[in-house]
Length: 235
Image 1 (cartoon, rainbow, N blue to C red):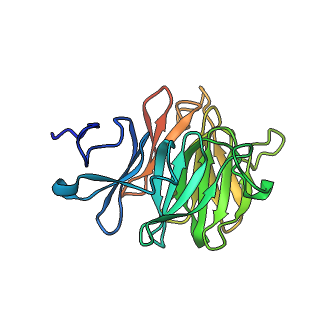
Image 2 (image 1 turned 135 degrees about the horizontal axis):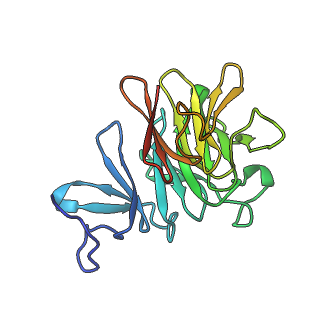
Image 3 (image 1 turned 135 degrees about the vertical axis):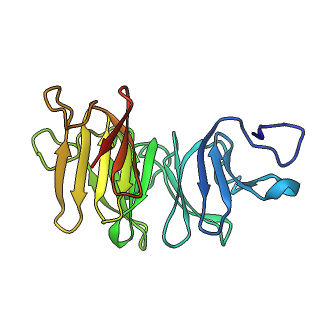
């Protein structure tokens, strides 16, 4: 094991020891997101190089998603969302939350804390937030085209606005896991939702109300991380 840590007197070290996001993109480049913004690993000689330092100064990057166009979507825990173009080396667009420099309400993110990112069918970027549900951004126009919120009076909505997991599976279905709201499956072809909630009497359902991580395995099953009862495996 080789340890990489922040060293204030050594160029090429990590910008900060709190690291929350790692991504190896399709070109094989390693990106690191943390309390020091965004960095790229450029080998032993250069080490970790800070990218878009001015645009991301003071921001804690906690999520990184590479979309089908090769762009990086960067979620933060306090400053919303940013879109970075590695080819140009610059931030193309920012979505600050309402009250933090956002312009028109239509361009503001529903919540400051981005907790998950996924690319759905037709180039939609699903942005899961910890309190504002899911904002859906059209990857071509870069406009927010939908806001998915929990509505207790409507069964066809997500289970809770505090979303921890968002996943696009290989069949094109979207999955949203939330604190206390279980798991919701969305079919883009019909815009229909199916919710799977925790019930003590249902041994085949989620074992905990909070689904905070989701990952699809090679056999198509979903591994679901709960906030208190380990991992559920969904067939």
